[in-house]
Length: 287
Image (cartoon, rainbow, N blue to C red):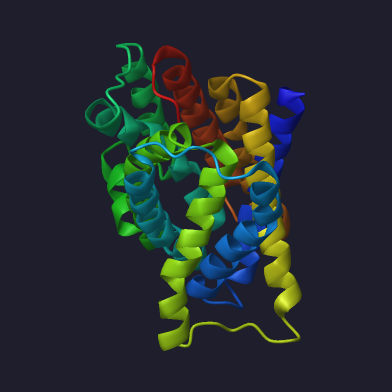
């Protein structure tokens, strides 16, 4: 059961990213971020009402505020990156998240990786090198990540996620998984609402609401299948399998957006994926 759900989570997340890339040509990043979080909150509300409010721990509210602020920012940034850059260049950069977590988790939740985890870090960085390699062995492929606007934005997103992920774990431990997902989605929606109103960023009309609803439902399916998989299996295994979404995105980028250099990007992603697996299985960090 958990394996099927994990594979579905990876598939839904990959499809969500591809569909998001398509919608960035029509909608602004604020609309996409707002609608995505709002639909998840609305769809989870019946489940929260059915299960009731869990007992809230002392760290719940602080975790909720920190996670919601960071994830509201990163939600906008992700859509911005997808608009600026080929998605097959952006998707592999997500694999850098565990690298940043290695440095943030010991300070926030007192969890540290083993020495073997550094091998995983090395592989991820090497994969990032291969991703932008253009035939000359020097540091330019790494520097190109900073020069590429979309990749640079996702690099910032990974750094911010390395902070919020730790508080996400604290928040779920201080309540329940589904309640915290609902609470953060609702709070993110409320945080983005003033921007939508005062900057008039919302572009929903009677004729274009269906694509936005589809995006929200895809995001919900990705979130729920991952949550169900984690609750039915071992979190490290589930979240490792979910990283397969990178390959869904890259193959989809070739099929639907005719992006180039797919073989090189698949190779880079495979190297980074192996690095992620090593970190997952050799450390105490739960990502």
